Image 1 (cartoon, chains in turn purple, brown):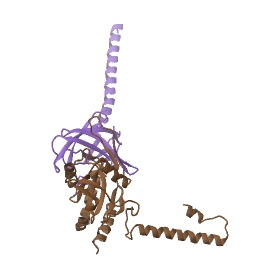
Image 2 (cartoon, chains in turn red, brown):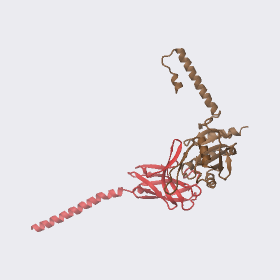
Image 3 (cartoon, chains in turn yellow, red):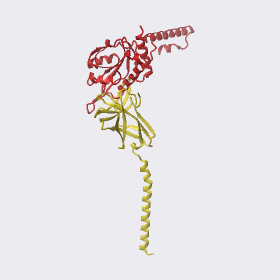
Image 4 (tube, one colour):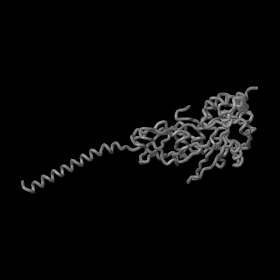
Length: 167
Length: 216
């Protein structure tokens, strides 16, 4: 073999090794990207309902959020074409006084759930674009800290309802 | 606490010890009796207010725009609750619970009235209050008035409310006392239902207070 030819074979082998290594690396990375689901893909919503109040009064929206993923999901808020503004809020009680405050984000633990329910966490819906009729469904799009979004249909319930399926 | 401590004096003669024990028991009995008298003989379950709070007294405007005083509700057991209509969470929850309580009382519920007193008179006009309270229960009445009249009423019952700072869009929240004050048909303060009170206990006490009134 001439030295030239030896060099040629070596470079072909080297190139093949690099291709193989790159393929292996990609193969190793692929399952990672598949496991790294967005918060919206991990979270299941159930028992979603809105307590509709008369006129232009703000309403409270409630939902149970289950996180089936291995990483905590951070709910940061929601938006809806039916309301001008949606805010994530928490009601609290201290010294017999009831208070409400805005919440930046709410963590849904890995393999856990949080319940947005009256007198606790809720979404405050303000300035309905059109009157919301009890019995109908209103779509709210939940927003998570990773930028993913989850559309959920909320059942509109009358003012004196105590849950999504109470009489 | 002091009375309990003096029940266990260290190294005292036996006679003195038994005298002390007797007086302790007498004191306890006296307290127990006084407690019974205050609760007015009814085995009420909610926090007893009898003798601790003034009789119901106010001069406000109802949700029909009519001037009303506490005497307009004499003969009815009154459930007094302070809140505001722009409260989307806790106030509606309380009123929805009270609605279920009224339903459970059946025909007796006509002997009671829910008085929802607005602590946000700037936004809660009688028409807004009317549509709000009637969305919960036909026996609910919305009351509003001058800030002074409302402040006097909340002070009477050591209830408090405060307007939180305005948000960028001009909306604001109001922090407020969350209990329901229950008065008998003579306007006497009887019990307080805290937010944690069970529906069963509220139904129980209202049943007693309304039935008591129905007796000759």
